[in-house]
Every structure is written in structure tokens, then in C-alpha cells.
Image 1: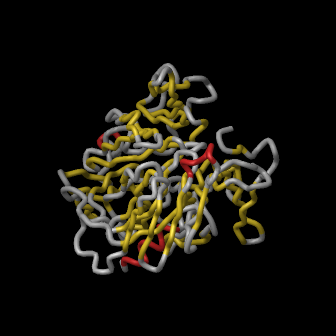
Image 2: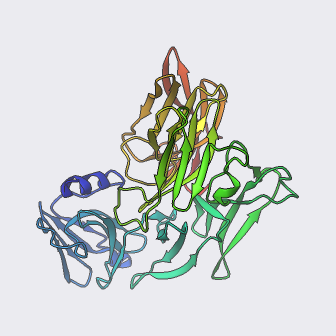
Image 3: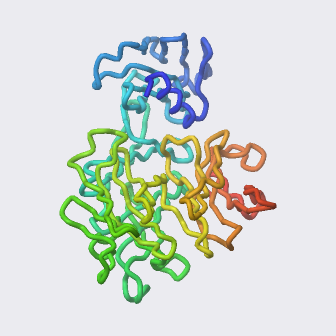
Length: 421
């Protein structure tokens, strides 16, 4: 991919990139930490911090090596913590650098950033080894001098955590998936509960919610994150066979398509692991978890021709088993965030896709009926609905009307959750 194109794609995820020539902030004595100037030309960023020191970032079109960053885009000034945020790219990788307006201290991260409501904390994820499916998360606190690593956690082998939102500056909501407890889900393999990570007495601690409204027992299929693949493979059929690094999926012709695992994930775009999760036998599709460098994806494999249809999130099958919906709920580079794939005799056909104009993420909740899907939308806050807030969450409905899929946001007061509420 062209290096300039890569950096442009990533700016879509940023909220307000500065392209002007000079800006001055906070000249009052009680807000002196916010005095700065930023100049931006086609290939150079010049930041004058409050001490008068100048910091320069200059693009290098030759991009000589993977360890050197080549392109820089100024995102915004984080007034609450006194840091400048800059997007950086080496052509193959992108990340962020924070610059302290107090003394110029730099803090780099390649991981996605999840800001707290007041932007005084961030959470970042670090993928260590996708073959072992290990990943951890850091929480950083900021002051005017340097960021502090306040917390690090790595899920147990049989547990996964899905980020939901920052509830407040000192509380983060997650969905935690784990092997089912017989006391709550006697017939299930896995279950999901709500859990909050809270800052208590200067320490971050998890609090699981096992109330009736929180616990969800496993249903259609079980993600490989929670249990071993061997538990998912049909016990008395030859449709799925695991032989070392090779995963064999039987086609209707009697032949097998072979998906082979590879050591490591050196190539950012090339899949390196394949794991069976479910077989929708009545419609002829296997669901496969796919490991890549930046994180998990999914694929639907047809038992007629063995072709893989990749999805960015877990596809969910409609009650009449005629459509899959794929809604993107995590921050990755993608033009579109919702897909509907129709099951036909000729294969899966894209029936609908949605590309937002701004920052939007969607979490699948449920198929209400065969033509109605309930989703949760997370987006930048509407100034009229949520004045003074950075983000808002609301339920939205995707409905098939006269042959056309249409999104309907519920903007009622009781449905819209602003910021940390």
C-alpha cells in the first residue's frame, strides 16, 4: 500500500486534524501550561512549547527503515493534560506520539488509543503472540511531566475481555467471556458477564457482575477465545479434522479444503492461524477464526467450493438463516462498518454495506426478526444532544424497508447515553 495513502486512511479515525499554519492557546496566567504555537507546512510540523523550546517533525519521503517513522500529522492539543497528539507512520506501521507542552517529553505507542472522558487516562492494547492468543492492556495516567503506567492486565487463557466504554475517569466497562459456571449456565459451554475495572484507593481492580441481568449463556456458537478448538469440532463427523497445523474442512464433493497455520505473523495482512468455531451445516458454511498480526478476523467458508469470505467481526445469522450481519465494534482501519451478506445458491452476496462519514462503531445486539437488527452505536457526541461531551452511545435499528436496508437512530432522551453516563 502507498505510504501516503496509509497515513490518510488513519486520519479518518482522528477527531480533528490541524492543517492550519499557526495556532496559539491559553495565554492566561492560571492556564499558562497551555501556551503553545503550532506551525504546519506540507512536510513539517513545528511545535513551540510553553518553555519556548521548539520541537520539529519532518516527513521523510524515502522512509529508509522500519524502525524510523516517516510521516507525521498533527491531530490536536489535549488541553486537560497538556500534551500534543501526533499521528506517526513508517509506511507499514502507524501509531501516535504524545509531546508534553511542559518540557517536550515524548511518549510513543503503536496501539489504538481509548481515551477516558476527560482524556486524563488512556488504555492501549499490546498483542504479544497471536498463536497463543495472548494480549494485554495498559492504562496510562498523565501529568504535565510524563505519563505513568498505572495498570497492566493480561487475561487468563480461558478468558477474554471486550472493551465497552469508559464509564467515568475511574471506571471502565467490559464484557468478560469465560467457561460457563454450572450455577449460572448449567447447559452452556461459555458465558459472558459484565465487569467493571475501577480505580479504588489508587489501585485498578475488576468487579464482576453475576446478577441475572448481566449473565449471558453461550448460544449459537462458541468463540475460540474461550475454549479449546477440540471442544468445538463435531465429535462424530468427518466434516472438520485437525491434524497438527492443518485444518481440513470437508466439501460436498467429498474433497477437503486445507487451511494451514504458520509460525508468527510477520506479514501484517496475511492470515497466520485458522481455528474452527462452528459449522452451519444446513446452509453449508463453516465459521473460522482467523489470526492476523493486528488482531483476530473471521471467515465464512462455503462447503460447495471452499472459498473464504472474510469478515472483520463475528457474523450473526438471521432467524430464517438467510442472512449474516457483520457489525464492526472495535477500532480498526476499515472503510465500512456494517455488512449484510445474503445466503444464495451461488454463494454469499453483499446485500448491504454502510460507510459512515465520521467516527462510528456498531455492536450487534440481536436480530429482532428476519428483517430487523438491533445494534448499539458508539460515536462522537452530538453537540445538541450531549453538550460538552466527547462521545455518546445509543441503540439503532437496521430495518429492511421496501427492499432497502435503512438505519434508524433512536435519539430519545432515555436512549442516548452521553459521555460517562
